[in-house]
Image 1 (tube, rainbow, N blue to C red):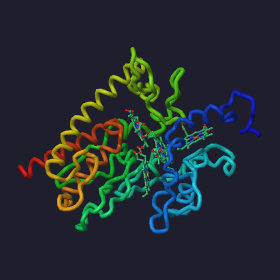
Image 2 (image 1 turned 120 degrees about the horizontal axis):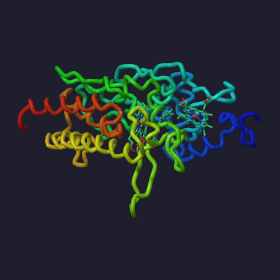
Image 3 (image 1 turned 180 degrees about the vertical axis):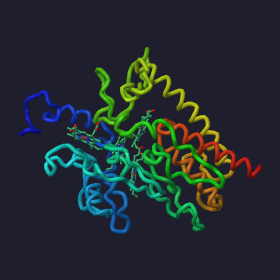
Length: 312
Ligand code: HEC
Ligand code: HEC
Ligand code: HEC
Ligand code: HEC
């Protein structure tokens, strides 16, 4: 009864209700993509979308189709009844990413198993035609972007991965996304959220939990939000310009969120690589914050390459 006590005690580890309530608001809890159990022919979703598939994957390295599945919950990341504490299931291991490189940032190694690029099929360097509009890095490339690894390297290009968020934050994701909770609202902790909703005049705005950005010394959440949004606006402008160039080449759809298939689909490895990188930056969803230097240099190299091709 040490963990399941019904009485508040000084030790939060003995009193799990606040953590459960933070987690209740997390996308891990609310999403219904846990029904992606996989099939015999395509088992590949369960390891990142279900608690059971993740456990099987960590234990065996296999992607399993499951008979039953549940959303990502406490028992995905922790095994308290087995380990008798709240250490992480895969605490010590380093994740090898499908597109090259490793990720090793303490407690957030647990995140990188799922929040990483999936291998594109067909591969970038293959001459097999792209037939699926879902081709690309999938939706969670955050650990690649943060650690500055995994983007396709154009001939002659070098990408600068050494942003402070990569080399200076030893615990990775956890430092920012699981920071201490702000006063009176839910963000950080086991909500894993950077932002919370606040009212400003008559409208609702997203506000950044500055406790996750402690290195910057921002004096309030309002100051932090202004700084983060200014960076994101510059990034989105630059990425938008690259998207327009790719649409003009016919390699990206009009909504600028998927590769084109059929006759217009990119065929050379450079063209596919640029589309892959573009989608990776878009799907990262941090607006360049995870690794400002890496993301800016990827965009600059892609634009320079496209300009060197001359008008299409
Ligand atoms: C390597 C881990 C991994 C694998 C394998 C994986 N996913 Fe995901 N998927 C993620 C992550 C992480 C996210 C959430 C990313 C985010 O919100 O930033 C996600 C998001 C999604 C979403 C939500 C997209 C949205 O924006 O609403 C869908 C749908 C999805 N995945 C379907 C699938 C399907 C179907 C498969 C199997 C064919 C699959 N995933 C395999 C990691 C994975
Ligand atoms: C997606 C992965 C994930 C899920 C799901 C998750 N946790 Fe955690 N939990 C972590 C990580 C990572 C840490 C370490 C945070 C840190 O070092 O600041 C942690 C820390 C903790 C701690 C503190 C441990 C200590 O010794 O200080 C407790 C208690 C805990 N989690 C309970 C829970 C409970 C209860 C749930 C379900 C409601 C849950 N966790 C769901 C990843 C997760
Ligand atoms: C078992 C795989 C798995 C693990 C482990 C995991 N995640 Fe996730 N995460 C997902 C999936 C899948 C989604 C998206 C669910 C959906 O939208 O369908 C997600 C969603 C999120 C979101 C919300 C994204 C959005 O678009 O709103 C954040 C933030 C996040 N994860 C951060 C983390 C952090 C930080 C860790 C480590 C402490 C972690 N995750 C560990 C699979 C995982
Ligand atoms: C330096 C702090 C920092 C680190 C480290 C960090 N993030 Fe983020 N992350 C952010 C910020 C800031 C945003 C943008 C939030 C917004 O605009 O709503 C973000 C956005 C995201 C999103 C999009 C959904 C959302 O919550 O807005 C996901 C998913 C995510 N991060 C996952 C991760 C994962 C997984 C890791 C570790 C591999 C990680 N992050 C590391 C700061 C960080």
